[in-house]
Length: 263
Ligand SMILES: O=C(O)CCC(=O)C(=O)O
Image (cartoon, rainbow, N blue to C red):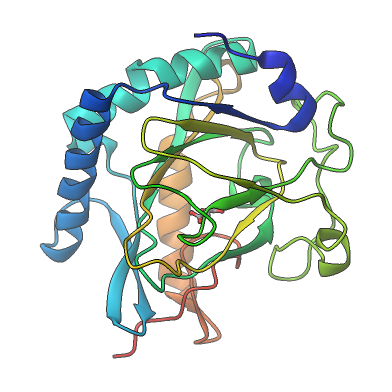
């Protein structure tokens, strides 16, 4: 399968259609269900819930690869890390892994770039692996070229846009971006740079819109995964599980628009 490295560098994202065989998609789907089950049974992983009109639902799971062989092999040894090797121009290491479940009524994400949320190193590339159709109704991602797209992205912070205190792209700037919906089906992959502006809406469909997001860095920069999760868990222990009681804290930055669970 051709990997269009030039297109990725030019626009900051790359869609590969039908990259994963249906049998492998089915295996990943089953594995994601295992991880979701851990959230209800005090199993491994870092899990976050949100309130919807239908009740409290699982919003995100992270930090699970040590506990699932199928996911570890897919994430660390499969096609995705090979494609990332081409995009970075060198071997890669996993920085973090997460699943966003986006149940019906689940929150969207305000316009942001991921770079400020991913501490310790200034350049990452993520791969979105949809497990359900990502449509405008179900809350697909919208991406936009960064204002200086087309310049070299690695390893500088040249494409970082001004943010507000919550870490979201300033509204005056995000309003002027050329946003494009990324419509995906299971089996497709979306690769995007940690400086690529993106946002998504609430899921207005009647089915979950699950997707895994797998984030990598160039191996020559070092292995930061353990440090990232130690830091994130420590920050959550200090700062709690919400921002101002109004929005669930699932990231280092305040970009998620989901509501805290009512207790
Ligand atoms: O899953 C989504 O709808 C958006 C995900 C996202 O932007 C994030 O997790 O930072």
